[in-house]
Amino acid sequence: MATVPSVSYSITVRLEVPAGGKAVSQLTHAVESAGGVVTALDVTTAGHEKLRIDVTCAARDTDHAQAIVDQLDAVEGVAIHKVSDRTFLMHLGGKIEMVSKVPLRNRDELSMAYTPGVARVSMAIARNPEDARRLTIKRNTVAVVTDGSAVLGLGNIGPAAALPVMEGKSALFKRFAGIDAWPICLDTQDTDEIVRAVQLIAPGFGGINLEDISAPRCFEIEARLRELLDIPVFHDDQHGTAICVLAALTNALRVVEKDLGQVRITMAGAGAAGTAVLRLLLAAGARNVVVCDYLGAIHHGRDDLDDSLRWIADHTNAEGYSGDLRGAVKDADVFIGVSAPGILTGDDVATMAEGAVVFALANPEPEVSPDDARETAAVVATGRSDYPNQINNVLAFPGVFRGLLDAQADGVSQEMLLAAARALADVVTDEELGPNYIIPSVFHADVATAVAAAVRESAGGRPRGSTEA
Image (tube, rainbow, N blue to C red):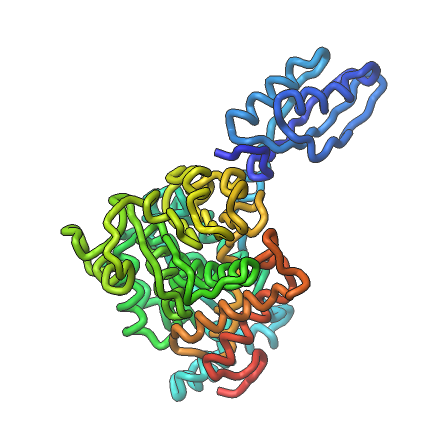
């Protein structure tokens, strides 16, 4: 639940008020008295007796939006005509579409784009399959694949309910990297069926972006597809999150003048995101890490370790700490949470080392209140857009795939992920760097291009626009 009004709960109320008197000024007061924020007030029809007005305002949640409508309705002389949820309006009919890149104005153009001319292109690809990257959408197309089992923070809501999220992801690919992405929502949560389905559709795509598939199945699905396919397979919940966290932590440690190889890091969360973050931190040089799940610290003495947790135990917690998260946080230099809301307090953060860095990334409610954490921590980051230092995967995946596609890469390596994180961190200049600016805005013009260039160079590929086979 949002704690402050948010555009994600934005409504437009169409109403009529008397043309004279104080009714118009009372509308703004009514919204504000209900705790909302007026973002627009438009007179759509004016008459001698009545005015028709659209009042657009932000609320905290659905119930709060209704409370604002009730407050408006209580203003003397107001008649409510219609209430529109702007978020739902944006989604009507979906958010993406297919558009032809070539004109089809006459018979000649039709004959080249389709039969009989297209047969020549098909035969060329049959003779040389690599030409598919040059002569089809494959060179610039990504499949965004989910089974709907772990959608945002909503859980296992299924493939149909996941579709709006996958549409949004596809729109972000286009907006930030010019990539044509398409949502593929599979009506199965069987690992073998998912792997087989993606294998079967792979010829039409230049890359696979796995999204919102629950752990631990996501690990096996990704690993098997990487073995089977000759195109990159990228699990954004793992690798996108890891890139952004490493980039932000690199800059946060610059702020507090500490070294990654020397700091003590406590992590909360051992799922897909947490494990990927850990792996990339270790690859980047982190040495002292303790990871906790809902049972406490992960260590060799636990009898519930699956393969993933056993790998964590093998590579972290050298001292064998066996206590809870609060104990693990004490004297730590860094806390990274990719877990659950409200598991720490400001008092817990106060027990951390001087110059502490806190990444509370559970969304929408972080592991600890950012306001409370900021009382004692030197740098605080969240996954939310209403606080400084938002860790958002859109900082990573568009540029990563742009680089992979441009390089005609056949896979994703750890070196590429590290290169992407370094490039993302470097977008923030020394002059800009500070406790409230350790990671650039998702709208920063250099983000996608810098990440793409780093990935492309790491992959040893050609620059975008090359027409070589």
